[in-house]
Length: 154
Image 1: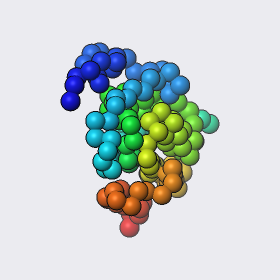
Image 2: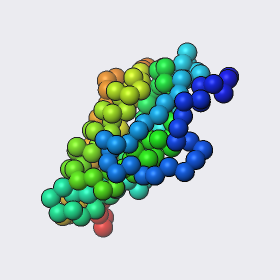
Image 3: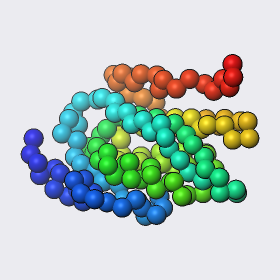
Image 4: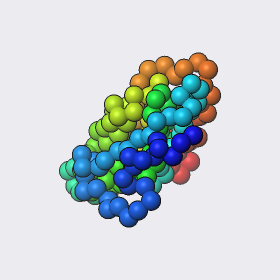
C-alpha cells in the first residue's frame, strides 16, 4: 500500500482548531485499500454533546456509527472534529443524529451505514434515534451496538 492515499489529508498530524459549526467542519476521506472486502467499521462517541435549541442547555449522547465501506474510509480525526463541532450547535436530538448520518452517507457513499443516538434524559425522558441507509449486506458481521436501554433507577 502506498502512502500516496494519505497525501490529501490536511488535519491529521498537526494542530487543528475545533470547527465553529457542523457546516464549517471539513470531513476527510482516504481510498479504501480493502474495497474488495465487505467489513464493518464502528465508531463510538460516548461523550457527544450539543445544545438544546430552545434553552441553550447541554445535551449528551452516546453515538454508535457502523458502516460498511465502499471506495472510501473516513479519516477519524476529521470525524472527531466534525462531532465536536456540535458542542455549540443548537438542534433537537433527532436533527443532530440524522444530520450526522446523512452527511457521512453522502460524503462516503458506503455500502451501508447506520447510527444509534442514545441520548441521556432531559426532563425525565431519554430519546434514542436510529437510522440506516438500507439493509446491511448479508455477508458482514455487525455486532449489537451494546448500549442498554435506559432504565433509570431500576
